[in-house]
Amino acid sequence: MNDINAAPVVNSSTAKLVYILYLVGLVFGITGIIGVIVAYVNKDDGQEWLQSHYRFQIRTFWMGLLFMIVGGILLVVMIGWLVYLFWIVWLIIRCVKGLKQLELQQPVQDEKTWMF
Image (cartoon, rainbow, N blue to C red; front, side, top):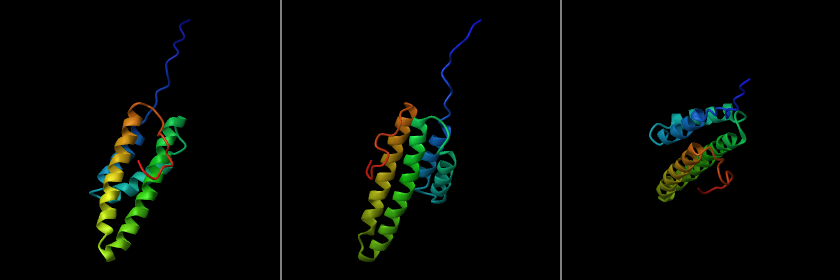
């Protein structure tokens, strides 16, 4: 008998979709909300390294929402734009970092960090 031990196929396309939805959310905000819903639905699926990406994506959404709220409040004193600019750069770096680790099938390093 020929038993072939093939590595299990890992479908990381859903996690990749969430990162892309977040990036598109910079232009069309609703896609960020769709992205976090997809991340919540899939957070228990797949291998542990893939689950770390979903946890990272969920935290990215909620921390980004907090930055948006703080930025909106600080618009009164005209420094909210700096918070918004920081949020845009922060989101892009987190998504690119996540996509890179996703392609390598590695877990997110320090998924609970507030920075990058």
